[in-house]
Amino acid sequence: MINVGIRSNAQQLSRAWQRREQAIAPEMRAATAKATAAIYQESRKNLKEMIYDKPIPNRMETQIERKRKADSDGRRFSARKNFLNSRTMSETREGKKPAWHRSGNLRRSERMRIASAYLGVIFNDSGYAAARHDMKCRYPAPWRTRAIQTMGSQARQFYREGIVRAMRAGIIPGA
Image 1 (cartoon, rainbow, N blue to C red):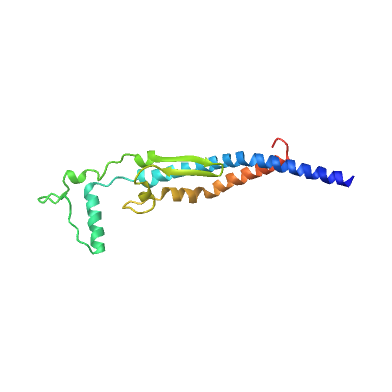
Image 2: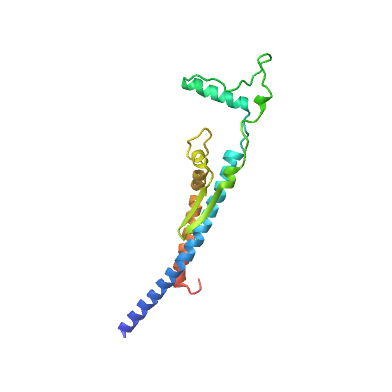
């Protein structure tokens, strides 16, 4: 009699773990999709704040900034173009133009994809995105790193909830 009860308990446990095993992959896939989407949205928000919400300096301001940097580094600075009117010492029309044209390519190139049940990838196809993000350019903006720091705890919470739902699948029928 005892032998039958033990076998019955073992079979019940075995079935419960099989249900959990079947439930874990879809739960983790859903958690990965939620976490990746949340970090992606935060990344896009940071990209906008750190890059696209900043005003574009004019050519004269850029030249002044380059001269100041060269002076502080002990280097000589020679302007490519003179943006000061020699007679009035005021900015020329050319110096008031924006230093560059904002194309929006960095923002358009930011993408996300779900690689597996446990891996979501956020990437940028733009050729200069890595330099901007990794602080290897004149105007660095680590937007994705900041997004991961901000949303990391929320992403972990998505995974915790998914694991709890998968574990309950083996205990509570229909959960």
